[in-house]
Image 1 (cartoon, each protein chain N blue to C red):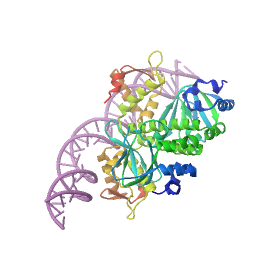
Image 2: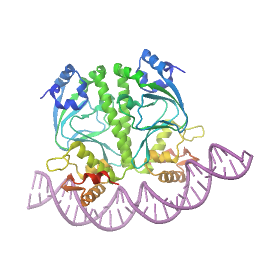
Image 3: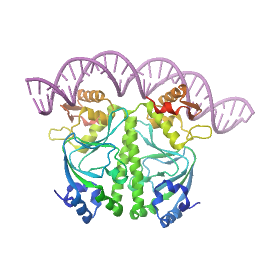
Image 4: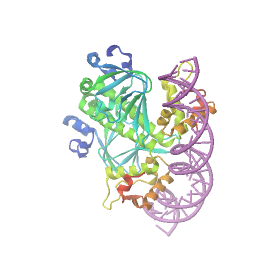
Length: 225
Length: 225
DNA sequence: CGTAAGCTTGAAGTAGTTCAAGGCTTGTGG
DNA sequence: CCACAAGCCTTGAACTACTTCAAGCTTACG
């Protein structure tokens, strides 16, 4: 098992503010875990006793609505921390996390890191900053959800995935989501999501191959209605 | 001007974690401000150089969508802090704040409080906790917006206002919002908001008097579709 | 007491949902 | 390696929710 001190992922998240000694202590207690595609990492309502740090792979954070449909709240990739909120409050988690492909993660027990959170202001400040950023993103999502059309939201999520997570060698989006996942991100019925994607396909804005999606005309997506 | 040390509002927000000395210093630098109904406290994109602490009155935090419509993100009342996010990150604010009725606020310059944020872990932790709570609320709102009908969302915002901000002596909601504000919270056209409220009125779930709203049958709201 | 701002209603149009059926992939066991 | 089943993906058609424009009404306020 590699050490936290030398883990590249550290550069991407709040752990970078820990001192060398703090990191070594954390490193000694962490557990590396592998989650297979589709695996539920944790579920809404569970008590988390630590945070997960994503080393590779992608997962979705979802919340169940009263109508029985899941809503995707956020996608998390390399460097992201799962369970930040539960670390700070004493509450159970309000989201579920599901692996979208095979993932490598490090689990750091709460007990190890709480002490640093209370004593290292730089670290606390850094967690605070990522939280503030999350909050800003969340405001943005809320407005998008409330005011934009399904078509527009779909265009934006495709661009978001393209820009943030990139494409594979053939030019297809490297994150492969089911139509149901897309529907759940955009907040619509699966059929609606499919219809929008079909329309994009007909207009030569995207091309598909099974579930995979390639963006052919990025510019058209950008100026969508 | 009264002192922060003896301000009751302090009990409701993160300032409670400041030591007596810290509070006295903050107190010496704060400015009391009065904002009249409808007054814009700050606007999206402004650089805030401090936080506002609400002593009385209510304000809405809104974000402008690309379609030109405002979306209400949050209502803030006594004890709430405005500009928390801008305190932590060095960024401009992403929301606008508008007074919904006459408000009393204290303005604390950033310079005064940043030092405490860096040196008093208890205070930082407390800000972190309220931020985590905001984030949870925000997730909840996102799911509601994405998955629930306008009617349902309207019912919930009425109950929310009733439960959190109470009623006046006649039983009317003590926060008075325009139909446009309701539309902007629920994320719909003003006419839709009006129609839903009219429907509630016809079904004797609410009664109205001008803009004011009284909830007659709380139970019907609760079991809405 | 007049006028502007906000509330209400109607009617027509559009976007999104739902149910139902059929077609493709992918993976599995014979 | 093929066949078949399960799980996606796709499409159609009817329905419902929401929007938009347009007009009339009520209330608050100078």
